[in-house]
Structure formats: C-alpha cells, structure tokens
Image (cartoon, rainbow, N blue to C red; front, side):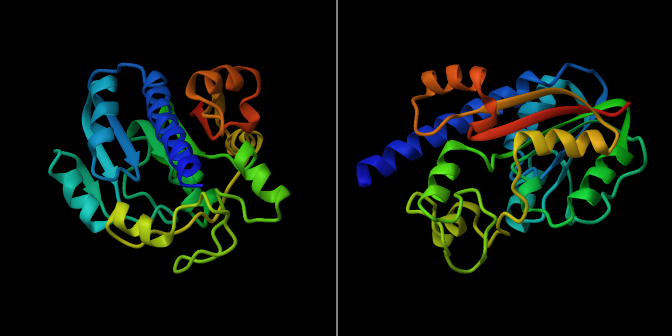
Length: 240
C-alpha cells in the first residue's frame, strides 16, 4: 500500500503541474490589464499568471492569514474576503479572474459566479479549475461504497468515509498551516459549464487534466478522448 500510495501521490503532483500549465495556456497577454486571483494562496502562482497576462494591477483574495501575508510580500494587493459574499471591487473593474481549486470550497456558488460577472469588464474572462466529481478514482470509491475522494467533505475536523488515498486532516493542516474548509460543492465538467452558461457567460473552452491511476503521458491521451472522467476540470468563461 505504501508503494501504491507514493505512486498516486506522484501522479497527483504531476497532474497539479499540468493543471497550472493549462491555466497559463488560457491566459492571453494584455498589457496594462487587471488580474484578480480568487484564493491566491501565497501569491507565487498568481505572479506567474500576472506575468503571462502582463497585468498592471494584481489583486488577490485569500482568507488564510498566513498565506495572505506571504502574498502581500509578493507585491499583490490582497484582500481578506469571504468568496461566499461580495467581492470588494467595483463593477466592471477586472480583465481576468482566476480561481484554481476554490469553487469547491464555497457554500454559495451562485453568489460567487454572480460576483465574478459583476466585477469583470465586458469581454473579460474567468478561468475556473476544480476537482471532478466524475473522475475515475471517485467512481472507484463509490463502487466500493466509500465517500468520493473529492468530497463533499462531511467533517472539517476528522476524516469520515474517504478511501485510504485521501489525505488526513492533519496532513492538510501541515500543508496549509491552518484548518481549511472542506469541499462543499463538487461537480462534473458538464455541470461546471452549464452553471456558467445559465449565469450568462460564454464558455469558450473546457479542459480535463490528469487521469488516475494512469501515467502522465497516458493521462494526456485519455483526456483528449474523454475529459469527463479526468482528475481536474477547467473552463474559460467570457463575459459578453
């Protein structure tokens, strides 16, 4: 089990690298633009996005105080704000919004998407990436009668119902230096596209990344054929 666990961890790490590369591939240079990164963590990846975009103003929202402090040291304008509530920015003030591994933690997705639409400029776009409820490893867990790896999370204090590959609460606390909110909303790529379309966005691109338990090279081939069961799902949604 230890060897298999390490192998899955390796695949997960490779998928995370690929996920970030895919996000960057969707960012088009726009000198003098404004970037908002929702859930910016320590700001390191935010700056990679900003450099690709050639953004003049770089804004982050991060609720974790330790990570927020680190992001501010990266010259990011960081807000401590609950993404279930209003985004503290003016209407039509942002060119690009990114949210990587954020939307699944929220309670009020409707509010979040409405706020994204409000603060985006016309023709501005959002790149949203999240876990896939229909991923192969989640399906396998359900076949065994276990809670899907991606959640929804039943408890933020103890591990309930997840299969052995799921990291423990203690591991998550060590990684993020604080207790983090579990996954409250987990969706398929069809649902992710649909909710943004219903909210008035044009979904230009949808992407799958990773395919457990297959090797990175094989995973890239599989997502071309069937992204519906990939590890991560991603869309680029444009405000008309």
